[in-house]
Length: 134
Image 1 (cartoon, one colour):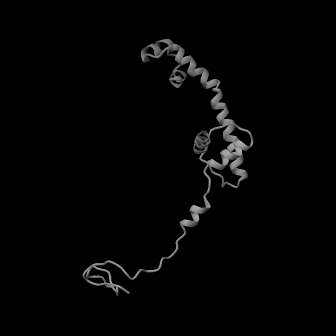
Image 2 (cartoon, helix red, strand yellow):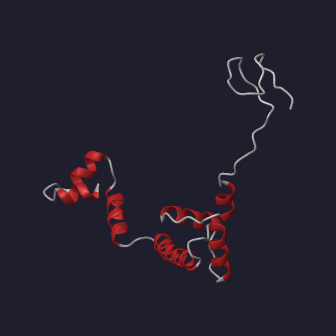
Image 3 (cartoon, helix red, strand yellow):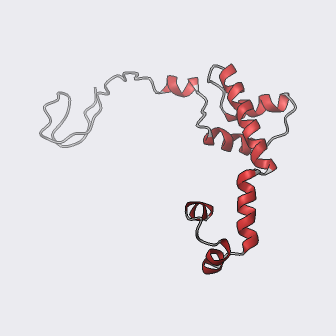
């Protein structure tokens, strides 16, 4: 809305608002919000900077639970879900060493008890579809 009027200054504000059925007070509130962001938005920007610093100090390992714990320890009163949202918006994610280790390719021993069709070229398999015992 504000960009429409900014791009076409020859259009009058009141007539455009009337055509779009928007109250003039709403338009002027939007304009003021562009110049002066609300307190919550300013606080989110500050918190995001703190979160980035904590995340960088941890070597990029800390996720939202640990970042929240550090903020709490520093005396910053903020909710866990707000920390999660700010980290998601800033595209910051922690690293879980346990998860990476569990995804490692560990070869499993071949089980001799297998099911197969009658045309299988593998030994120790029967053509009837039932497993053979070792």
